[in-house]
Length: 137
Length: 364
Image (cartoon, rainbow over all chains, first blue to last red; front, side, top):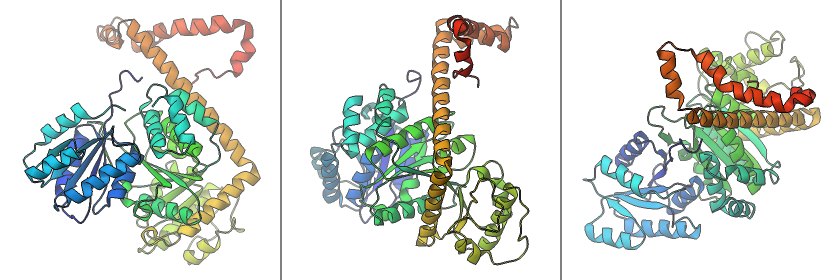
């Protein structure tokens, strides 16, 4: 049975902080679903702790954080820290989407983010990236 | 993490290990059998509650409030929420978590979303195994939440000790829908969104259905205020209602998003639990469940064996081609493939026919 069954990729699409713009997160959620992923959407205005709780309990391969508020420098490291606490950082692919200035992108990657997707990123590109990099379960 | 480490982690109360154990169970990944076997001996303590109902009935919201209320009482809670998956892409959006607003940041509520993954029958097995994991982890209460449509879902909630069926107020059509199988599995009914128009009527219709189901004629067809009576009647079974198996499914009204009636639901669940224990029905239920589990496993394993055998013989396609070409038919193919297995069973068991009769042959 396990042989013919395809690997299922589980994703958490998360909105953190005071940022009410979730159109992007919705679009990504649908694109991931159509790509055959199982997607858990966090809902709006979540705290970093909530995101960590959800990522740990749901045992997702991929955590996608959508931030358009500019607070990524504060919120993302808190999430990374939380994941580490539960031993969930190492085998979770962490991607960030939204409005992230170039110089911040490098800093986020230095802090544990695997990839950053800006406004120009295509769905196909993201799905492909996730398929290639999602850690095994 | 290998199965032994996972078991150790789960028993030691590590959230990460529990989460990974459920993943292994869900994926039917290597070692899941050893995992579930090992966890099984540590399970059996938790009360399992199934919550089902049509989409939009308010299941997730109610589950959230139930979990929060249990937490107030100092109990720990595990939740498994199952959402359908797309039959086309296999993907799914698991949205029940959004409603879990009352348990933010509380790791003592372990919430896990599961996709139906389009599997036939396998889902209920995976669900009950996941319940075993939560149980072994030490959760006092485990809640299974699923959309109540179709055999799959009904199989899932049947793994619960007590099943609550949510009915939103509205047209009588909702209640009609319940007749198709869901009515029978309900240990209690919850009329959620009871502040909406039509709630009284829905309660009334449910009362009639419950009474009909028990072989009685509704004693109170017609107009009366259902509200006061249903809540009052919660404490134990209503004296005026026909009882066949000693349990009359109570009807509880709630407004889940405001938390109203949640205590009543828990009281009804507790009553049902007492009933299960006192009547011995609980033991019966457990036996039926284990029998069902064993049957399911046998079916799955046998299927796998058969699939492997078919592959060895050149795959199913070659048989299909022969049927298309008119050389044979599906029944003959099935016979041909099964004959060696049937021979094998009859060969080894010939001297012990009595045992074979009792034994769990895969009759279905």
